[in-house]
Picture 1 (cartoon, helix red, strand yellow):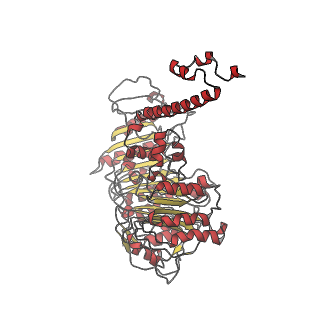
Picture 2: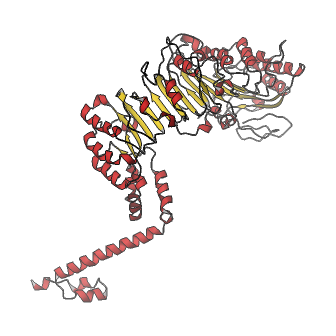
Picture 3: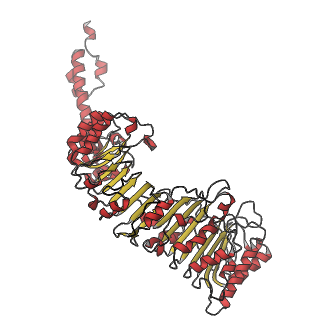
Amino acid sequence: MPEYDSVRDDILLMLPEDDRAQLQGCANHQVRDWITARYLAVQRYSSILQTVLNATLAVNSLPNEIFVDILGLASPEQDYRNTWITKATGVCRFWRDTIINTPLLWTTIDLTAKTHFVELCLARANGADISIRLPGPFGVYSKRNVNVDFPEIAPLLIPWSSRIKRIDLYIDEASSNDVPTNSLWQLMDVPLPALTSLALDSNRLQWAPSPLPNLRHLSLSTVTPDWTRLPLSQLTSLTLSELPFVEHAPFASVLSVLEACRSLEFFRFEGFKVNLQAPYPSRTLSLPRIRHVYLRGMPLSTAILLAQLSLSQDARLWLEPYHYYEETTRVLDVILPKDTKNLPTVGKAQHLMVLIYADAPDEPPELIVYADVDRTDFWTSKPWRSWSYELPWDFPIGGPFEVVPSFFVRHTVHSWHGNAQWNGLRFIMQELGDFFTATVETLVLRGITSLVDVQTWAQTMAAFPNLKELEIIGQDCDMHNFPAALEPTSSGIPCAQLRDVVLLYRPRKRSGSLRMLQGLRTALQMRLEVKGGSRLRSLSLLLVTERNDRVFPPAFVMEQLPAVFRETLDGLKSVVESFVFRPNTGEGDVQGEEGHERSIEGEAIEEDTCDWEFW
């Protein structure tokens, strides 16, 4: 009906007067067309306003290169599939335009992604150098579909071969048929002039590399290449894992490969085992440019290889031997060569730490050895005293090398059978002097100290006559045999330059290991009285306390301690320049103001002339 073919006047009253005048008397379809056109125009204008508004935000006012750097830093390190970057395009038009038009944000090609997304990344890379990655089924990729469409992916990548800068491929031949896998290997057969980093993990035994003129970083796992076709002389980083070397062939041993790598700075060798019956060259291979060496394999193999290498003093050496089951109490004998003069980080070490972890009688203990030539932040900050300190589980590739020791051994010792493992610290101490020299000035020992006899303590002191700092961390025990090793002998004063001693232990008796403390006081007095003797600069007793311990609770104060214990502490104070006695909070050795007594309960203690320090 005609009266319903137009918009009612009361509805038009909602519009501005000019718009209402244009629509007065118009048919419904005319009104709809007009409003639709106007609505689209308003939307466009609103979008423009939003874009202008976003442009006023601080982050969007940055130069594009800085904004792109921020996006790169904000993206998760393992976001190889560009998931985070893709989601970031939805923030606003400015972000979307910037991200899509920045080739560097699309240069990592993850082959586990869908084919169309690989094509999209290649297109958006727009000629920039790209990285190709096919991760193994580990970690976040543990459930990935290994059935990658190689025949479809390979033709997409080959045209980009001149722009491929990095390749990291895990190819499981056993779970793929030969045809699709071979199609991906075709990528490795074409010239790759821009390639600087290559990592291959595959059970394909033989591989003939294409020309790789700019290759600098090479990692091979279970892949045997034609070494003669690799630019070994220009490599700066080499990682080899589970590689068999063919006898009588060119580069038949790892030594021949290392000799050809004249520019090498980083070397990682895993899963190796040498023929212990085969003759080995008597010459020593000098590697003056190498800075980081990581070896993981059979212990005897490690010792044999190290005996043939000569490293610079700046080279870091990390060793993680496989489990060694042959029963023996001498562990370092099967890890290190007897002569360490060509391994300065061992033979010239000035700072040494040995830790034995034996948490349960039925568990094999773990041996940790740290050493450094220079006194780095690691030795001044003493992170090992903190309960939250965690040992590194792996060689820190690309990590902050300056905060970890330059020499590191981690070894689970299966050869200490039965209760013998509780003697682990004693066993290792008996070996230290055979590998580390008189250059050692700092020594930290941690383990079951109550089973270390006087002879072993004395042997250790004799091995390191220039020792200046000694820290002993008793694992749930004291060190009652230690003081006797400090006493002067007919040969002189053991470790005459010793200046700082720290003893950390858990009192297991009401006496608080009184016998050990009294013996320590006697030894220090004897050192003071002998000709040429001197006081210790500092002596620190750090007690590991328990909440239910009534004598040595975490918040003890001097008046609560047994009288005989306080008298013993007074005697110790008289033979040293500075004396610290406190519970160990596990937060490091934080020193307080001298001349104060303090309780960690916060109650006021009057200041006097005493040098006690309480936390």
